[in-house]
Amino acid sequence: MAFTLAQLETQRDTLVAAKNSGVRKVMIDGVIVEYTSVDEMEKALSGLNSQIARLTAGGPVGYTLVQFSKDGRGNHGRD
Image (cartoon, rainbow, N blue to C red; front, side):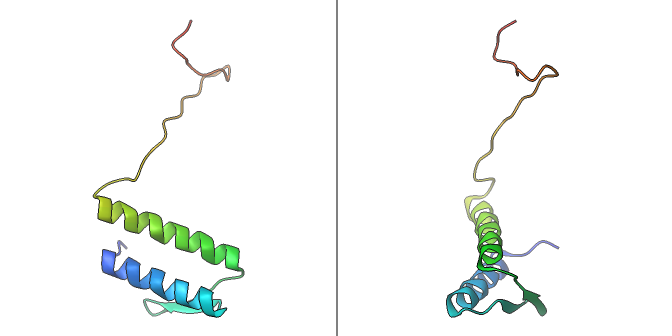
């Protein structure tokens, strides 16, 4: 299910408020989510912020191209 920008921002705001008050259990879109650590909450916030950034920027924030070869050296334009 794809969330709207408003839904993602509400989820983020809910999670930030819970984290700042020391609560690890939140209700997001009718579902109770219990985080095991602040680190887990930070990772969820990072994911929400990435999704929000993609929606507000109209596309991916950035990307990295990686190329591998069978010998592990990669292709640097040399034979």
